[in-house]
Length: 294
Image 1 (tube, rainbow, N blue to C red):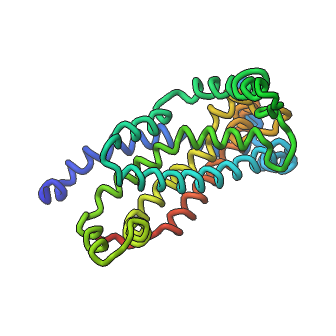
Image 2 (cartoon, rainbow, N blue to C red):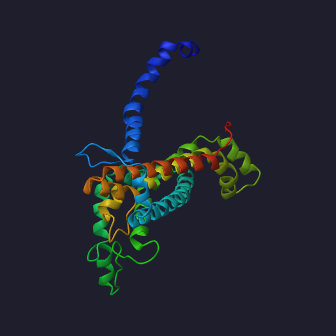
Image 3 (spheres, helix red, strand yellow):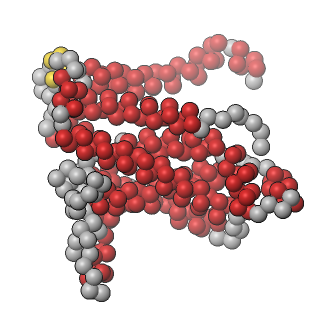
């Protein structure tokens, strides 16, 4: 192995394909997006450089303000709820012997299903005349407008979409935490049991500190996924009613693919990229920990 690591030709053979893939799939498109964000570009005519005009227009865009507010809400809601529920489910399933694989598969199953199909399914479930409201109506209870209410700083549809996203993706966080927990030496738990620690205290003082790196990884994935969240929202509400459920990704799609404002959409994309980098940096700083063996 050491001989292979000293062979520069072998190192280049392994690195170059990945470097080329990164350059053509990520780096060049990012640079193009940054350039287009400084241009007036509709894909039909050559881009015309206009400086920071698109970014100035973003500051006056009311829909952009709603989209940014909703994206930040979705970010906080997803990170907090998936952290709590993921840890809770991982802790429970780690400590049961019978049915562990069954419950693990059931909870993880929504992660591998199509978000477009799930969005349509939940749209019918929360329809004013179908699903939940039909059951409530049968008992004489008027159901709310789950996906059409426009009241409040954070509207009811955003809360509904947040809980649907939690149901769909909590299995991913759970699996990450379970993988990390399974790597903790059982002798630590045996020693704590001998010392009289309850399972709750063992989880607090042994499990949580040892899975801290994985918590940071899971929260980074949740943060990035929340900021660029698109398909579920688009299929359930399409950003409506009256733009109250717009997020950065749906606003970018609307400006770029409906109104053909590719320069303006690229500016939104750059803002989205910067937010993802900032949140990833903050999370990695908060959950930075020394590496040590379990």
